Length: 242
Image 1 (cartoon, rainbow, N blue to C red):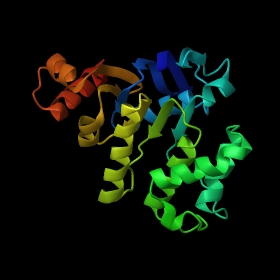
Image 2: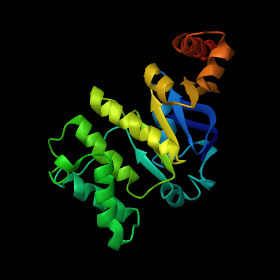
Image 3: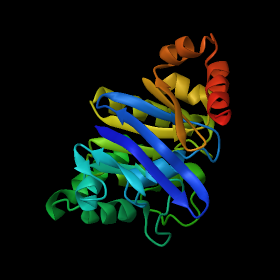
């Protein structure tokens, strides 16, 4: 479970986060929905310990991301915006290297890597160097790397960005499987249809603040809008008017 409580983050004069709070429970898919520049990626970077908040707290399964950043990292699998693969290693070597970094027993790494390669159906290019991979191939390898240590909490930053239709469908199917396995899945997106199709809970972020947080039905009820896109626009305007 991920718990975010009143986190703030500024970059000079720019207040990227202004008191963001929400929960992402186990066994559910929680979506961060908002326009570009709303603070979604900054929030996720705090959670996977790349950034430290200026104020507030965030916990992964009860572990504070600042006080025990290593402990928090051990409990998450993160797919950041941009794959960041080692281009001169094969896909298999990239995944195995990350498995070693996560502290997996060296005697089980080969089997773990083989299993995640099969799960994500990347056998065809598993033993090719990642330099020159398509966006979809890079995303799949980065996701395999994030899942190889069986994390309870999965954090995905705009995971379908740049993917074709078939790759997007495959990724959505995997996200649903993770939820069915009782994992906590948190992902950011600015694609309304994607969030509506996948998420149990939606956190709408605008101008560094949580504009609204509920199920899709709850957000429609709170805004009085039958259409989720209209509800999203209404929630954004409320924050921008403050």
